[in-house]
Amino acid sequence: MRQYVSNISPGNDALEFIDRRLADDSYRGSSSSQHNRFSMHKVVTILRLLDKYAPNHSLMRIRTTDLSKRPQNTPDEAAYAMFCNEAKLAVGSGTQDAMRKNHFPDWHRMGLIERYGHNQAPTDPFSQQGVKYVALSGQGMRLIAADGIDEQYYIYSSGIDKLLGGFISILLALLRNNRFALKKVGIYEFMFFVSAIGTNTSFNLGLEKCVELLKAYRSLSTIQAHSVVAILADELKPENFAGEKPAKRDFHNWQNKAQQIYDLLNQTVYFEVRNNTLYLRKGRVRSFSEKVKYFDRHRVSRTPGFELHHVVPLGWSESEAQFKLFDNWKNMVYISGYEHAQITQNGNRNVVMKANDEDLILSDYRESNIHLKSGASLLYDASKQPILLDYNEQIRQSVAIC
Image 1 (cartoon, one colour):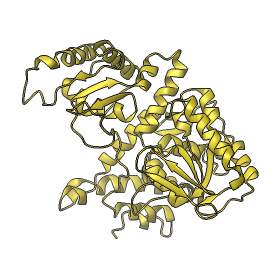
Image 2: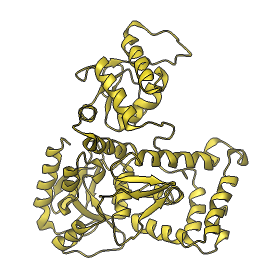
Image 3: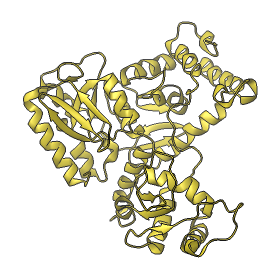
Image 4: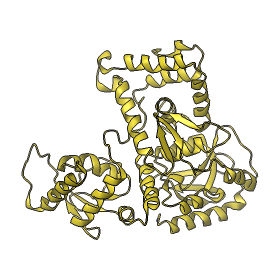
């Protein structure tokens, strides 16, 4: 394994982790939006235009060929062309190619639009599939019809959490836990450590281990920390590596990905970014009283290798009332780090709770079920199972999570 930064402070676990991460071709972590730069105002403006040209959730036919290959629109693409032209006039961006190749995939993953294939069948937002039609989704309609900017920001924040694969939930878990005493996360701390949480990689981290590495990194002197970034920026250039693209390393590309994530997080109701450092917004209570209640109600103790997990993620809240509804011990399970990583890798979509004797199953409405075995991968009082199941049903019905 090549040593890039370990020798800056021999024996420092954080630096050894960075070198170990860079040995993996997936060093940048999970895939996410990287090149799009959009604000809530722009998204709302464009979605309102989509509702204008394809009202009542009707399907709009889009072009499937780049303008460079076929400059002219077909007659059934006329509404799409007018929609894109008006969007570009309104917000300064949104060519026909950029809309379908960059914006629409992200907004589909945010749950704001739906995309359909050639036979008008719904497509999976997280899979590569041919797309011929788009329509405003129910959540997209709620966003453009939201009553007040606060409600709008909650709905938009929920979409960002889905787009980023649960980073809002991860960062809330890190920054709201008084035991961790982190208070902030710098962009390089996010790049090197936080973005490794719950990844399907050789460098996957759990919350507790991530906190250990963050504190080890913060133990470096200012000069040492600057040296880490300077060395990586100089060494990790594609031209310094032989072979195909997966074997190359690109610090600028990695940093750009983190910057895009921070730009999006800064638009949420939960965080603010100052000088490339992320903080909780004022009003985001740093209390974990509901977590304390979980341990008390279930009569379990903190156990190494286990993590407290919100079944319906906090980041999916669409109002302050929903946030409080989700941040309840009845919406939590204390599960092993392995199962927690599986849920994170699935974008926190395992929100449906079912019973299997004393075990619990968390489903995502598709084929991904996480089986939590009582006493093994799940620590809880099985007599409380009806309470948890009833609360899960209550949450899903109240927020239309079918």
